[in-house]
Length: 277
Ligand code: SAM
Image (cartoon, rainbow, N blue to C red; front, side):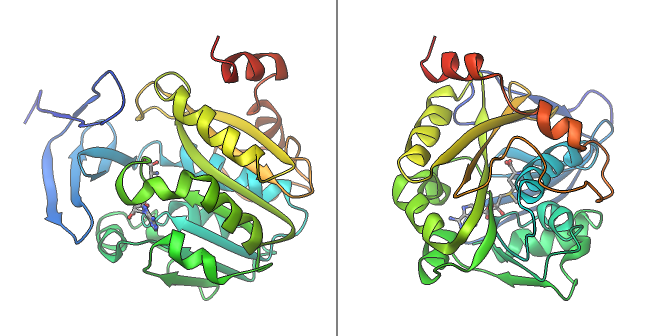
């Protein structure tokens, strides 16, 4: 089958990505969302939730390494980590590369995403059986409210901020994140495209600044996401975040101490885009 394309149904971006596909491997509907797995001659397998491509096998490392290692290496000794979302397992895999980690709790509202990933994405879901991993199927907004001073790093790896994922980008939620972190904890999340979702990026940064003393934005190029140039928001109770706090030892494909530093925007450019110029 040649020249067959899947057209993404992104509710926000003004453009539509078309991904070449050769086969539909899985199609189902969970209690929360439509789940599809497609085979692509260019990207390997694609995980699609509610019509939006979440991860691909070829480039997923560019997303997961940036999302996980920047907050993890900004912390000198992360032992207790919470991941909200991330049911494909890619962020968990990266977090567990840190020897300091004693416990990584992954809270994804949808257990079927985890089951589908275990079946179709073995290279991403390979860490669910790690004895340090704890999997909970609950709404992350609800889960986090029960904790105080519990986690060193909290990573939000959720779907776009619509429907049940929207609450994870509100000031109320950031207050719960702040409380659930230890006194020197760090938060990071994927926060959409620097081109097409600047209103969302600015809203999240503004809300974080009301709660945390250190707030910043870093970016990476994610070849499968609309606009390619993708943002990650990071917030810290104590440590600066633009430099790794310790030697980089994890085996990675793209993340390094240099890439950590280069991921952050120059101050002047950051201010300009936040002011909407
Ligand atoms: N890398 C992807 C992206 O940015 O396109 C996101 C990964 S995907 C596996 C995100 C996961 O977040 C989904 O499995 C979804 O079920 C989960 N999720 C969304 N909102 C959530 C919430 N409120 N609590 C817990 N998990 C949530």
